[in-house]
Amino acid sequence: MHGADIARRAGTGLEQMMRIERIDHIQLAMPAGEEPRAAAFYRDALGLAEVEKPASLKANGGIWFGNEGVNIHLGIDPEFRAARKAHPALRVHDLDGLARRLKTAGFTVIWDDRLPGTKRFYSDDPYGNRIEFMAEEPSNIGE
Image (cartoon, rainbow, N blue to C red; front, side):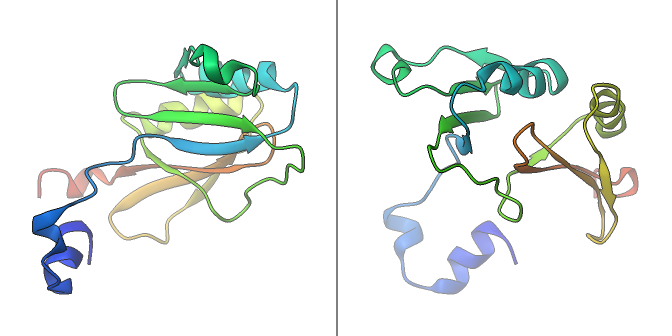
């Protein structure tokens, strides 16, 4: 059960009063001073644009990336530990092409076929944060 189905079954009426529209951004942690390594992964390997942070937030360090559908903020955590289980899952147009691009750039690609109707793999950013990349199986598109 997903999204609107859950709201309808809840029967609280909240879906009429307010509703969460979408995720604005994903925040991931990174160690201090590692922005160039973030750019090598998120900008160069994934193809996301580097987004200028507001002046009021630049002193915090970190770096932001995005495109018309995805915003990823990497923030400095002085006690950084990689997110090995919790992770964002990003829908990708050319999943095989991205897997090749990541491998060529030296990043690990781990395919996982356990989710029916979905082709997906996992990779880690330079700090060990788990990222899932996914696409619908071609036979499921348009159903």
